[in-house]
Length: 306
Picture 1 (cartoon, rainbow, N blue to C red):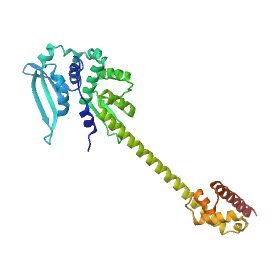
Picture 2: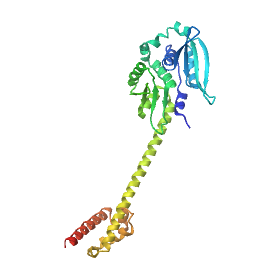
Picture 3: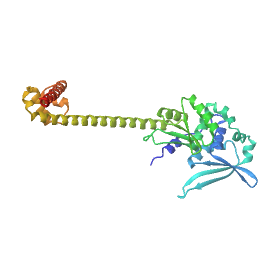
Picture 4: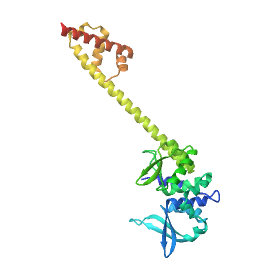
């Protein structure tokens, strides 16, 4: 089964366009995928990566900060497949660079988010860590789990709005989720992530989906019309058989008598097809059927009252 989230994340590239881009990668890890642990009287920062390919995308920029790595661990699941990568960093390395204060005061990153390349790097890293997208054949839905980072989410919402993207928010199990459900806004968000191949993939799936829906709609419409034609024809044939067996039939003109016999023989055809059999137009067929129905109803009422 194709994993569309992985397909999208594989295309995301992290590049250092300015000296602050590497810091934005670290801040995203700090807020969304890290925890502090005390070991042997010293503080360690444990950073978790959801997969090997995410680790390989992020680590080159992270390494440019020259943080002192204490350990690198692979956590396996029951099937002995790597579940996540854990990077342990010594507290001294980021304390010297004054990076820790950004953990306690998240508003400090606001100036960085105003810069286009820094914002792009930050949102790319956040999506690599916490983002997902649903199979576009089923529905259009992209979301990012912001956990308890309400302040960061607020900054991201405002920044994306400048890009013409109105991202919605929802609380799920004490986690703040930002999500998109409209196709055009998901495409604009993918432009922010700089994923042209996935954009083409989405547009191709959207076109196929639209063609399929239009085809199904036309088939359903044709089936409804056919059912309506058949039901109408059967009810008319039943009534016309009653007229044929009555004395009223002898009072009808030749066209009406021919029409009654043709409808009884062909209860499932449309007015157009019935007209072709009798060499009449659709409008003429409709006129004579209404005329027959109206006059026969009047004839029956007169019989009852007499």
